[in-house]
Length: 320
Ligand code: NAD
Ligand code: UDP
Image (cartoon, rainbow, N blue to C red):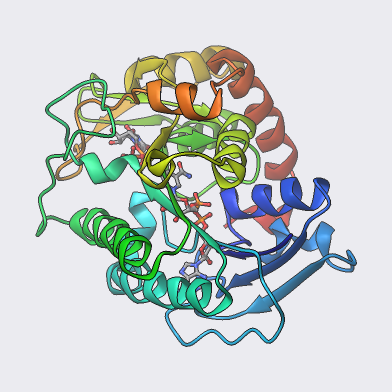
């Protein structure tokens, strides 16, 4: 298949490029590098089935050749990034989704949207099944990301219903692993970087809030299965892909200190506005539709991620 991946130079997008090339597909990666980097795909440059085009997907996308699938992953994703780029985040979720759906319609091909657990906002139900409509503050600081993705989901369903496009929506829960940027502001990358440098680990609030962390290989496996799955109308509805092992943020800090054998202390900082108190995926739909469930436990995933950070923090190019 010929597959377009927007945001292909980012953390998840670059792993997706690797995976799909490994399966024998052709990949065209579109990215404007706002939060991504060519470092993530430099090993693919020169690959005969891979092409990278620097392009902002909120602008018209012209592709001459036939395409079999569009995977829309472009969007700032870390809270730090979408707070820094609020308008770009709204635009890529809204205009970027419109443009990429337009491309899928023109090519009569499959479309997959990278959505997020943030569509559930600060959830009043735990774990979150896909049928939960969420609890989002539309005008809060995080609203730029949450509402852009909720709009994107609505747009995808409209293209499916009114234009008959074969669409998929994956609601991705917190994912971690190699190629996260040391300074992307997300909790796992922050804590590992701080622990390895002997700096205090910055726990926001009490650290009693929970998240459920999925190792990147598991996440990519679930997404790829969803792209290729055939099935009833249900396949077009959102599917949660994440690891249901729920942990407190303070617990993550303790585990990372232990794993890195760091002497770093923990310091508490102000909890950001609208920071969700709990988050855990109900993955019954993914299990039933895709036969998917995560296989990498938190301990093993963190070990692999720490090993990656040890290597990359040693390289001056990655230090900011
Ligand atoms: P990332 O920031 O590493 O990657 C996003 C990529 O999109 C970057 O390479 C960036 O340059 C590119 N991009 C942004 N705006 C663009 C535009 N207008 N045109 C072209 N390219 C653009 O983030 P990530 O963690 O890899 O996230 C990828 C996708 O997965 C996002 O859509 C995000 O919302 C979703 N997601 C990720 C997570 C996670 O835990 N990583 C969780 C939920 C959802
Ligand atoms: N967090 C923290 N310290 C950090 C970074 C994040 O305590 O240095 C907390 C944050 O407040 C949230 C959780 O860790 O409760 C996950 O944050 P992240 O930015 O990774 O993703 P989110 O799930 O909030 O989008």
